[in-house]
Amino acid sequence: MKLRPDLGLTFDDVLLVPKRSSVVSRKQIDLSTWLTPQIQLAIPIVSANMDTVTETEMAIAMARAGGIGILHRFMTVQQQAEMVQRVKRAESFVVENPLTISPTATLEEARQKMLQADIGGLVVTDSQGTLLGIITTRDVLLAPNLEAKVEQAMTPRERLIVAAKDEPLSVSRQKLYEHRIEKLPLVDENDRVVGLVTAQDIIKLHEHPQATKDSKGRLRVGAAVGANPADLERARACVAAEADVLVVDVAHGHLEIVIRMVQQLKQEFPAIPVIAGNVATAEGVHDLNMAGADAVKVGVGSGSICITRIVTGFGVPQLTAIADCAEAGIALGVPIIADGGIRNSGDITKALAAGASTVMLGSLLSGTKESPGATIFRNGQNYKVVRGMASLTANIARRKIDRQGEVDWEEWSDIVPEGVEAVVPYRGTLNEVLHQLLGGLRSGMSYCGATTLAELSEKAEFIRITRSSLIESGVHDVTVL
Ligand code: XMP
Image 1 (cartoon, rainbow, N blue to C red):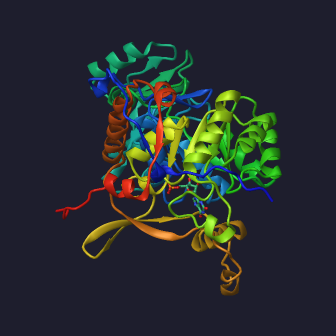
Image 2 (tube, helix red, strand yellow):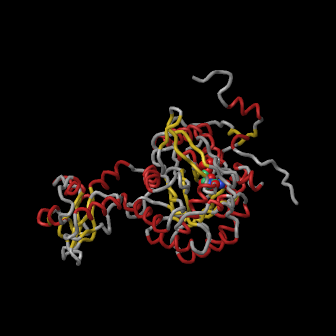
Image 3 (tube, rainbow, N blue to C red):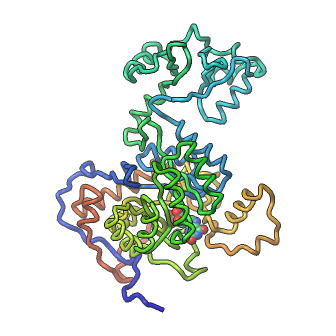
């Protein structure tokens, strides 16, 4: 037995000491950071791979805001790969493989295809890929007979404006404007479709200048996988769907099967960044990095919906875990993702000041419009559900997916949950929540005299505080209206 001499600290145990600062405007502050050495983000925020936090809508909104979303893995392989595809299709400079449909398909088939892919139009081609027309939602939505053929409702080839495949984006943009059209198919010399430029994509370039994008202008997205042999298949499907980063996410990430999984993934997909976790020690960071992890996720039992520390007795208070892991991470060149326990912008500032490159948020984002799941109305207020991925109901849901069938009632009592089901108040859109969180972070950086996150962690000085200081830090001795 060994007892560490130092006290483990978490966010409420410390404050950051104000420093001389020349920062006069929050606009001077640059929040850009690295998720992994290959992926830069404009803001240090990652949405958690939980089934009440990140699915397609959240991942799209996070990437547009300049962060990134990690799609959870508590669904079938096919569902997860489809979600990756949806994010990758949400916008791009050029849609490289636009979805097509045959002229003899029915309008109902066209409608279904557009609905499933969440897009507004399909290119109509023959079996050789030759352009025959375009059909859009407008052509099918009010159609009196959905059994009619696509060729009866599409805009035919002779009425289409097209562009050559290597035409510059500025020329395509001009064509879209001049002809007041929304879609511009790109064709080769044989009139075969090789791409599509949409007005929406060009508009989005201006709407979200900070968006996290790949070299083709598509939003970036991460996909979580487990550490079992079957998860290799999940990883393959997500890579085939063009996920930008894989996250091997296990509650205790310092497991040998996690190390082996990271090695296998790096061997099979050397070009894909791999994040691994969760750990709470420098040794954990070291071992995962030696296996090939490009970034490491830190936090054991710190999450809002976690009961791991109560059930198992294990964990390291989160600020100490971040500081220990970041020290190792900086020496190894491995970015640290502080995951779990962040409740407000002050906690984000502290986590980044302690050396994390990004923070992963679960319950803080679970109350947004973009999180999966319905809003529920209770006692005059709207709420959304958040649950731990090791909670009782999440365990049951996972077993149902694994077996593709029901789970007996007797099995419920077999489960030893390490997470809970909960509700959080509905907090509006992701952008509204991010506005407050990032505003607080920027303000915090100005107290430190830091204009970059690197400067924040260099200059940061923490002071441990007492319980009475914590009371002083909150609103006190007044009745809040
Ligand atoms: P926050 O505090 O942001 O934490 O809601 C999100 C992180 O919590 C972890 N997580 C769990 N940890 N049991 C745990 O011990 C669980 O059931 C559970 N579910 C999620 C995870 O790291 C997440 O990102």
